[in-house]
Length: 589
Ligand SMILES: Cc1cc2nc3c(=O)[nH]c(=O)nc-3n(C[C@H](O)[C@H](O)[C@H](O)COP(=O)(O)OP(=O)(O)OC[C@H]3O[C@@H](n4cnc5c(N)ncnc54)[C@H](O)[C@@H]3O)c2cc1C
Image 1 (cartoon, helix red, strand yellow):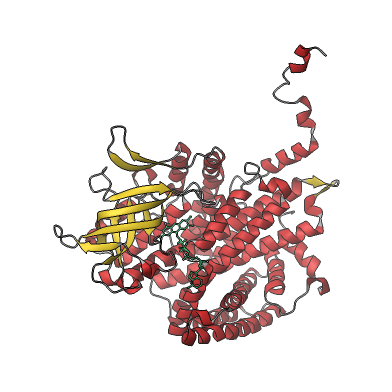
Image 2 (cartoon, rainbow, N blue to C red; image 1 turned 180 degrees about the vertical axis):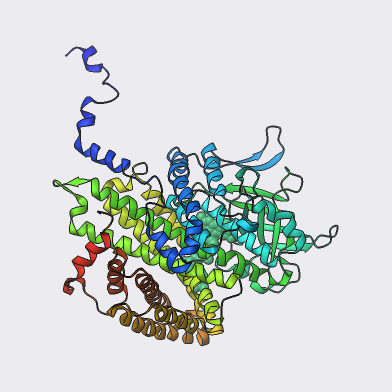
């Protein structure tokens, strides 16, 4: 061989490449990916029928179908472009002639996705304002892309809208709501919420940021201090907690302020961005550390009720939607993994034909069905609370689920994404092979923000002791089961599990009522067990409404055995294999 022959470049595309069957299988898998996430998840319509009613579902269906297509064909490709090319947000502190601007710059694909998301009407106002069911369904579809850089801005904006609508004075409402409700991304206002400081995220009562009344402007305050985790650092409106001088220590002394990014359209309103954080997940989202120095702001609601506003309007919104986001991540992980398993061959068979893989897929699907069920039930409670129809029991169940459901669904999302990665094998760990690594990293962040598991558990304990919401939740879920009617032997199992797990959780409530949360070290296990029974009950009511005989009936039976039936051992269960097959039916998985 001559030296010239040795260096002859190979053609860019290997001729044999097209014939490699493994690659052709992978190409077929990619070609098989959904182009509309609404059509790819028929269970969403069924869940809406159960909790919102068929008429409400029919009304919003065209918007969901349009958005399902937009997420698959516009939002997802834009997220891929940004993450694959590491085109993450950039902090631009100064303009070219040295003036401080504190801008965040994004890849153009980010704006493309934003336009499609805002056009969905997720944040629209007036007669177009989405119901909690519609917002849940739209946000579920969006979350098929993970956080995607826009989910957090949507949630923060939705929270700010609720805070202003429910607690803001007329001047604040007139100033900010029209922009926050805009469907046009280019002219919309986006909001953020800054509570966390470096000395503690969980311990919000330790907030040190200060507020002093502005001597020059009646009703306005000057905010100073450092905020440590500031997502949507590009927002037009920051909602910030700060302590007025002389206010009590702890959460009782906090005010909640609307702080515009700029007062004149360009100059930063008394803030400087220290840096953007380099994060494990939610990477396309701009999360910063920010110093405030005499930023001008206005209180949302009474100044001494700031923490209530932050919890009841902002955090309750973001915890509900965090659960929706986790559920969307689970569904996408299942769609990816089940389609892969249909196409990928090993040992001369599709990997989806191996019983061990089928068991994994069935578990993923059942987990997602359960998460969507409890989360849509929560959306129903949000709707009834919003329009004043919720009775005491429903209001208590809402308060309970908003925290407990966030906790459970966020753990399940990480678990389901991890199982999806396992189905894809080593390829599952490769960033541009599938979205699963990104979904897994985002799910991990969802576990912490909006309240860690321990903090949410402690909150549930406090609320149960103070407001009796465990009994309210128990009463609500029993009533839902009763209304749905008995559906096979699982109903009795779930009824019994609800009572048994509630009484175990009561032990922690009682212990914490006297000794504080430190006296309840088993609360998480107990809370999870109770929530599994709640999810099983929600699923059973759906199965009853649908008349049984579906993949959901099998998934529910599997779920009840796995999570609710005491001492269940699948190897002793002669029906187990049939339930796995029944769960996967309809997906040809
Ligand atoms: C990517 C990202 C973006 C974020 N964006 C925002 C934002 O925009 N605005 C905002 O305000 N915050 C934001 N956060 C902050 C988030 O809300 C906090 O991380 C969270 O509240 C936890 O606070 P921490 O990180 O300080 O944890 P810590 O409070 O330091 O807790 C550390 C550990 O101790 C445990 N712990 C704490 N207290 C107790 C207790 N009493 N009992 C038992 N265990 C306890 C926690 O569960 C946790 O496991 C963001 C976080 C992330 C990761």
